[in-house]
Image 1 (tube, rainbow, N blue to C red):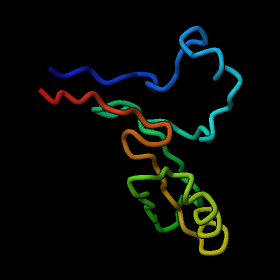
Image 2 (cartoon, helix red, strand yellow):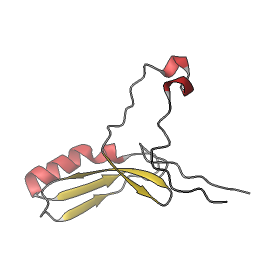
Image 3 (cartoon, rainbow, N blue to C red):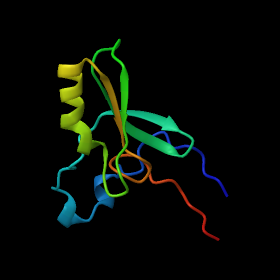
Length: 102
């Protein structure tokens, strides 16, 4: 069974759906741009000059694009690179796709 792509991040909930003890907590992940793909929303950032050579930063299984935020700024500022960092599915603010294990 396959679900259709989401048009909004799965991690956004109405305030009534959030337990009261968590309602005042701010999200630790800075919002960037979002693209909607086959398995839901992907949160990404693109830093640096448009004509710069592209560098893609991929985080590990226990990370998010935020790990490369300072590196991206330095590469853009001092190297003239255009740096793409994104949250893999299920990490940061990207969707966690539906998985049917049965």
